[in-house]
Amino acid sequence: MVKTPILKGRRAWVITDGKAGMEVQVAGVAQALETDFEIKRVQPRGVWRLLAPWGPIDPRERFGKDGSQFAPPWPDIALATGRLSIPALRAIRKASPETYTVIIQDPRTGANSADLIAVPAHDKLTGGNVIHTLTAPHRFSQNRLAKLRKKMPSDIAAIPAPRVAVVLGGPNSIYAFTGEDSAQLGGALATLATLGASFLITSSRRTPAHALDAVLEATRNTRRIVWNGKGANPYESWLAHADMFVVTADSINMTSETCASGKPVYVFEPHGGSAKFSRFHESLRRYGATKPLPGTFSKLENWSYAPLDSASKIAAEIEQRWREKGMG
Image 1: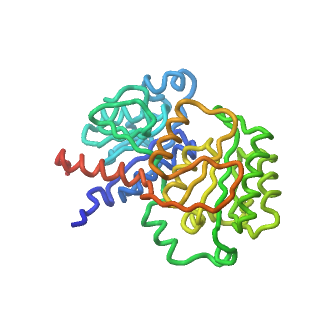
Image 2: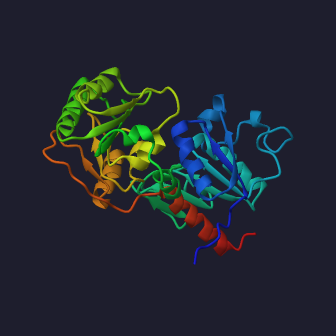
Image 3: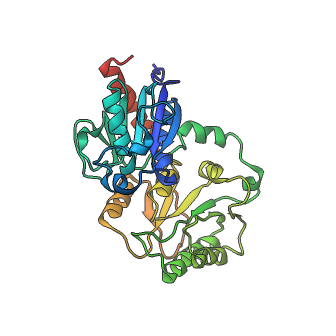
């Protein structure tokens, strides 16, 4: 028997600091719950920023007063992510104890900071109200991907299978992404091209020119689609229709999204890394979703696994705990 979504149509607030990579995670959970949600972005200044997540909310928010983005009527559920959002969530808990509160990722303020905290499996936070997921939540639900799979866009259908989606990130505080890395990535894709693969290629604002150049050179004699940031973003269609993925290890979000496909995901790891990222990628390898990108492909591999949809898992946990508390 399928349970009716108990929070469908309920008022929800999604509280973030405006970082796109964080916002998509918590919005994905709100969407999975089928709530009527509003996004509230906080940008505390000065000492209030320095004190987050432990300090009070910035007085400039005029919390609880007419005209403030944080004013009654209070939401049924408030979901937050990022240290700058925690003071606002704490203030909501105090002003409206009936509001169910959720934090995505470790708030660094302890397990008692919300009714439920959802953290990645590679995080060490534990507690009775803490759940762990293998991937970060996002907005690419299985229902959404299933609808997209009903009709393949003509441009994707025009290139031969296997279609390999190449999802490029770039350097960050964890990974360097050197010229040597780009050459290694290009070399691997060149051997994949000789086996008959076609390519769907997208980059991010962080992608260095030498990385994109290496990928384009490696695939120049193949059928491919390259999205350059102009026009409608085809990413969700690529998630639905690609036969295989190559993703760079620097983005937990991108790796998580590709693992919603249930299709093979090769992870390319540039120079750098950290214990946290190592735990994340190792957990996905153990699960059977990903493999390290080999330097040379001698054959096309294929494997499958139960798609990872952490937003739905978190949403189901929220609904279960809501029912157990007998909330209206």
